[in-house]
Amino acid sequence: MQILIVGGGTGGTILGNSLARRLASEIRAGKVRITLLSASDKHMYQPGLLYVAFGQMTPDQLYRDEASLLESSIDFHVDPVTEFHLDRNEVKTGSGKTYAYDLLVIATGARIVPQEVPGMAEGSENFYTEEGALRLHKRLMEFRGGTVAMVVSLPHKCPVAPIEAMFLLHDFFKARNIRDKVKLQYNYPVNHVHATANVARWAKPEFDKAGIEYETLFNVREVDPVKKIVYSEEGTECKYDLLIAIPPHRGMEMVETNNLGLGGWIPTDRFKLTMNDHDNVYVIGDATNIPVSKTGSAAHFEAEVASDNIVSVIKTGVPVREYDGRVYCFIEAGFDRATHNAFDYINLPELKPPTKSVHWFKVAYNQMYWSTVRGLL
Amino acid sequence: MPQRKVLDARNTFCPGPLMELIANMKLIGVGDELEVLSTDKGSADDVPEWIKKVGHQMVGTTEVNGVWHIVVRKAK
Amino acid sequence: MSTDTEFAPASVAGERGGIAPPVLEQLAEIAMLIGSARDAMSDEMVTRLARAISEGATLLDRLTRNEGLLQLLRVLERPEGQHLLIGLSKALALMDRQVAAAPPSSGGIAGLWKLAREPGAQDAIRLLSILSQCWVESMRDAR
Picture 1 (cartoon, rainbow over the protein chains, first blue to last red):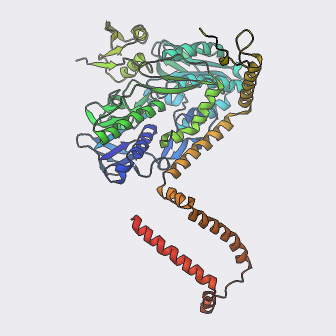
Picture 2: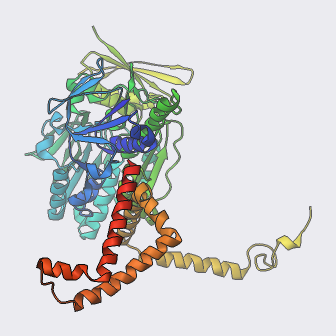
Picture 3: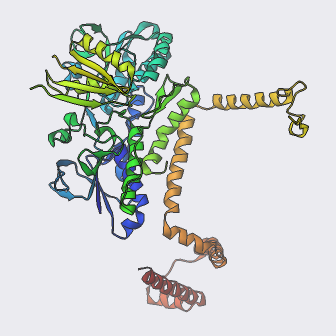
């Protein structure tokens, strides 16, 4: 049985390690082989990018060698997939090789496409890449006063990031003693300050307390980098001195060029995590079209379900679990306090007030993440 | 011939039915329709408000056994 | 309804019910201790602590899944193994002094002949020979 995992991010790495541990005896006996293909030899801890933007982490702390995170029994290659031939159970890679499989896992993630909004790439900063986060940090340190505006495009990874960024901006300028010289303007596409009801209910009064101004129903149409104005579909406009954009996202390009899903989002069963019409293909993480937050925690929980099912199918012939939509997101509410949002397809509890302890839990998790992807946590 | 795509956003809190709608509006053509299934009553109010503000068209909303079927058309 | 006073120790129950002052004081002290610990901590300390725990867990995981190392540990735990280890550690200590005191070798066949005539050297060669033979035999078995 050849298991092929495409993608070495959070989902792919956790799944690979989990399978390697649970199928150790089958692997030793030569009955199962696990191969993992990634476009990069490095594994990046994406949540760290927000900390880089605010000078709390340095870029080197974001990366580890993917090979150092994987079980030695996994056959790992830095060789990006270029073609999917699902009808023949094989993929073709950049090096020209063909990899056949019995079971495929697609965990290719998502990418930002700021170029889809006219003027966004030239006129705004974002913290969704290392270069972007470093550039934003520099601009924040040099900022002397004026309007810092946030705009949000959909869909995007990490739904709470815009809220966190506003609270961090508030504390950042307070720490620099220029908060009174800075107007913080938050613009959001729907008619609440956040798409998730319990986050919106919590964040609105917190924004009011922090003096963060907000406009809802602001869908970005275009950015004028010269006049420094961002225009909305609704006909309103927002002047800025520094614009932070949460850019629109799409699935990976090769998912689109191979026609696996509209927008690069692969049609996936939200409970079984198998690709529609392909029972031997699992899809996890940001690459799915499941209406679940695009977050590391979703990828983690999905990887656990997929692992349980793959192991069970191999050992007993039947799957055992379904994904219940579980997600766990930390929400930083400033430099020294945080709360969290833990929910699933059915339950959405109210947020608890932010505390220092939860902030430290997040700080600790920034380190414990590496144990998580190794399959220890 | 306008196409209608069904978005099953039942039992989803985040990003939620309206966000799914907005993300999928980008992927369809002008004149095509989206039918969003939602178990959240709030969406039945939120969606028309967004559609009106941004300038698309509401086709209709029906409720069947606790599930709202909200149909919209991309106008631009 | 029984009023079983043995389940209401005097140190906890106050005169009119509720929690007695000494217990309240203790609770307040614990709260202050936690508060002090929180004040003492910083983001950097939490980071270092979490990193140590995370890396420690990874190392432990690797060690405990290494069949070879675990087997070595089992052998070394036995009395003969302890005997071997203690002997080795003593030998290492003695060796340091002797090596420092020994004159540099003259080299050549004559020097080698002189060494081979020492009883200690012949014991050493026998020990190494026995070790090598056992090692080769067990490697053959393991394959």
